[in-house]
Length: 210
Image 1 (cartoon, one colour):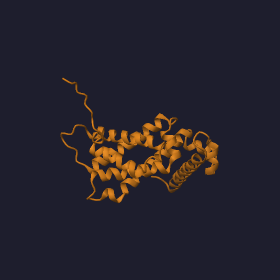
Image 2: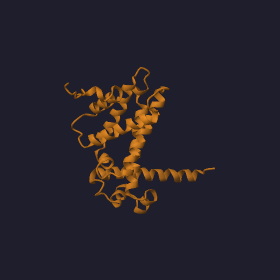
Image 3: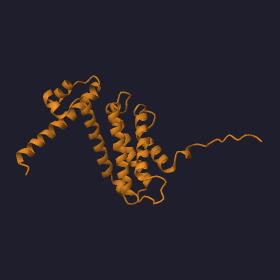
Image 4: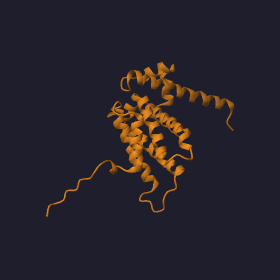
């Protein structure tokens, strides 16, 4: 049986970890990921370097935890959004609402997005982001839809395709935030998902003259 003392110890560990993550987010925003050191983070969190290494092996593991915390917060916001649970909303409206939340998050956290999606972003961190998005879409499909027995692709394939498109748009837009608003990006994404890519252009066939 867990003792109250152990509960308090675990609570203090959790609070210290959150304080390190909060400090890291502030330090990265101010200094950038590469320039920031573990010492900068521990000083901002008012803990020792030894304490840092009790929670994280290195700075890369910390940024992965920071990114995952953001993904989880974003997913919670999406699940709690009222217009997603409304009985009269369409699937496209649901996709738009989730995508808008995501693009707003990208806009509000430029430094973190640069770390995740930039050229120097770690493959492991990017793979983690894609997997998290794909899993969220798959769970959303299972919750909102009944899959057709004669569907061309299973839900896991569709969810990964949806996630791949969204991930690439997040990468592209994070470097060009002034070209479109989060609302515009979300509308284009939802439209392509529901109506298809081909509705946006006319395919020119080249026919040989007789």
